[in-house]
Amino acid sequence: MNGRPPAADAAKTDTTPDTGTTGTTESTESTGKEPADRTPAPVLARLRLPRLVVRGRDFTAEAGMLLLLAAFVAVAGSTTDAFLTDTNLTNLMKQMVTTGLLAYGMLVVIVTGGIDLSVGSVVALTGIMAAGLAADMPVPFALLAGVAVGIGCGAVNGTLVARFAIAPFVVTLAALTTVRGLAFVYSETPVAPTKESFFELGSATAGPFPAATLIMLGVFLLGGIFLTRTAPGRALVAIGGNAEAVRLAGIGVRRHLVLAYTISGACAGLAGVILASRVGIAQPSVGTAFELDAIAACVIGGASLAGGKGSVRATFAGVLLLALINNLLNLYDVQSFWQQVLKGLIIVAVILVQRAGRLRGGSGGTDRTKARTT
Image 1 (cartoon, rainbow, N blue to C red):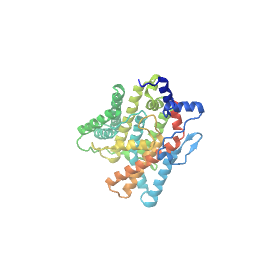
Image 2: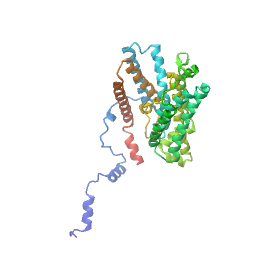
Image 3: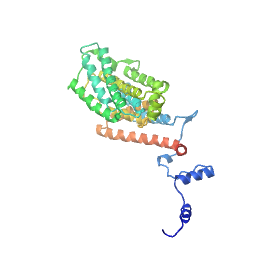
Image 4: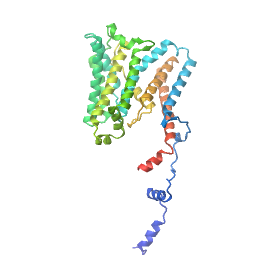
């Protein structure tokens, strides 16, 4: 129409520089080298942080957490005389039990790509039911009944997520309000057990260590073996990475998802009965925002909320870090509202430092890997 032959247009088009993917690919094939990534690296990735690699395994995150914990202990020991006393250390070990148990259960769910927002409400329901049932049955059976209620709550959550394909956030958010309501239905007022044996679980000691702390350590120890050394545990992590690939491999995804939420419910039930036994009274309002501390401990430990990644050791370090922060702020007599502000800022700072380490380790290799797999 414009009087120019089609060949002229084609020639003109060919002389235009190509900055797209095709041109990059052709340049790579002709030179035999990978194209330089001209995308500016994130600010955190440009931080030159040392890394600790032993026999091909990167222990930078674990080493960083240990250094951070050591720094907190050093600051606490040098700024307040009350920190290193036997009474305070015992209280510290007891106070971290609830968050620790919830954090492990939360980690099992998070590695599958899910979330459990109901654990705080489950703590309230199981604690108040155990305290109430202890008046009519032997205390061990009452405590077991409380844990069983937690298992049942987790199994229901897992069934709704796995069988009905409802988003975990929606299911557990509904469970948060439903279970909390059930706790108030059971008793609108706090329940105070009258049997002395009910308090033994929360107050008993084994040498210098509270029995409840040893139970939590046992959960982390056995839980670490479960996630890393057993087929169901490895399947849970694989589901978080690629659920469809796991299904095609012949592994029951639904069954394992139910298992993950059941474990979370069991940990919440155990935390509930231990908390009621330690405090000496069970309240239907207890446990509010407990799930946030559990999630924070997992995230501080490097777990990915997208699933497929999580460390039991690092999560335990996150639990210990949160316990140290709470304990220090209490010793410094910081007001509760400022405690929330400072605690949030410290958590963000820790996560930023960890992210800087991961970006530093992935820079130079991550982009090339993506280029090969795209």
